[in-house]
Length: 261
Image (tube, rainbow, N blue to C red; front, side, top):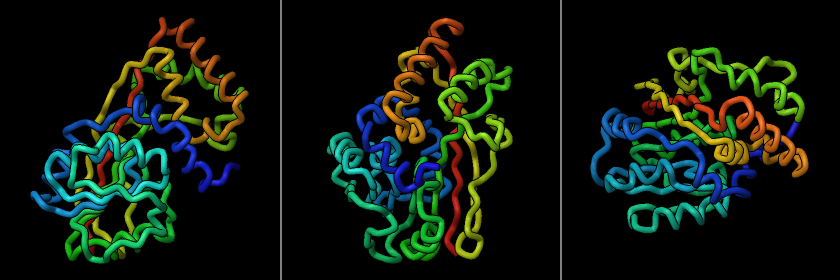
């Protein structure tokens, strides 16, 4: 099994591609976050794992003071370029678990499709210490969900995933239904659940675009180059030959907000 610490560093290898092809979060998610968290102009935010700044920008435009901690130097450089117009955003390169930040100084700590990479022994405790009294934690996850119409492409592609050993042999792969998604589990000694909602997104990808998307996932990037290229070639051929050159991908972006106890 590939080490989790190595996997979470693979995104830095494809920073520009990540910025180009990863699905964006819906505007309504950020409007909901701002309202439910009670953010005001001048609120202090800490973002963990901003990547290329895809979740940073929708909050930066509101004038919040944002400190973002990004593990990957390449991703951080792209984020600085993408967000250069915002003087209210500071990007720090480093591991969240190791970066020294002022305690009790943030109104909100948030992570978009990054929280699961943090050390479970550290993440809640450190975030709790960084938040002001009554501060909040927002966790955004990207879920691959069922199209609830038979998942024809998903089922047709499983043989290719199996061929290149990208499936868990002990667990049958399946997608959750949007309506069945649940809040991210919080440390109940440190946070109380305040709000949860999930936001469905459907994106149509050409065969070429879908292969680009696959090339941003950590388990694929960790495979040998020859395996990656053969896998991508087979997936592109499947989409072109059996799905008229394009597929619809169903996502749900979930928002869990916890309040510091």
